[in-house]
Length: 175
Length: 188
Image 1 (cartoon, rainbow over the protein chains, first blue to last red):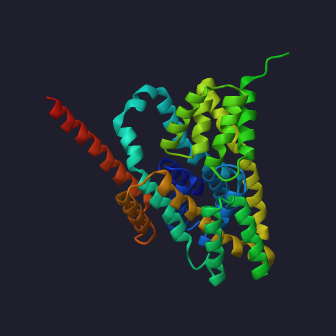
Image 2: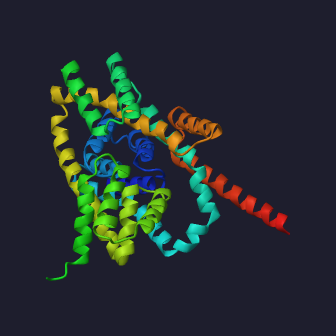
Image 3: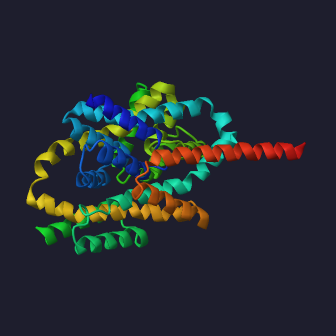
């Protein structure tokens, strides 16, 4: 049953997302590209590009998009998006109810600090896994990558502008 | 004047936030703050900072966590449901429309060429926050090594990230317990 699988997969992704949508990418990638093979690596990169150009959090966007692509049905989108948010709902509501305790609890505080290098590694892995032959087809790809990295890191160019520039370059070079 | 329905107001406020934030959860923070703290005065600045800190450290998506949390503060569980659906609905509809259309257009040579240019750029957009976080988290050299090891374990050894996170959480919590015990013993 594809909907159940979709729900379970995105529910697990929702539980293990620390450090925002980017950290979620390597989880989603492992589940949908490697394990279930619902989408090929190229298609996955395209989803990330589309998610970054459209409003809303990237985790929800990719869940919505994948839910539709996998099932070919709006219901798939609803299932995946709901599943990815459900753990947050349960956890945040629990925290709200036990606010005082959580604020003082030392293990929670330490856990959140200790987990930071893992989160950074996960985001780095999301980038590393995408550096494959499907996304980097020739030397031009690497030049575009370098330019985009420098633009984002040192000139704080917004992701949307960078993606539009990349699309324009692609059109001029490959079309 | 008739009093506006609070749920309707929460919904419209959060859907406005959802519709205008491009680039993920972190881009949403200043917009949420402006709407909720300054314009509508639903929550004090200090309380907002606390909501933000907890939303950041809890698992899940930042924007979703903030919506759940603020909605709960305003009107309990119903409020959190209304706020969250408001904040994700605009992007849900937009992405759905794109997903429906993209299938048919993806095979066009022009679209294909555009995405050939976009793909390496997207990889760079993911690499940048990873590098930036080393600084903003103030990671020590040892922790940077750990981050690189995690990267290698996931991307080369293909170990699922969930296993690594779970193991790290167990180690962290046991260390805290161990520290507490030794401190208590020292007190005695």
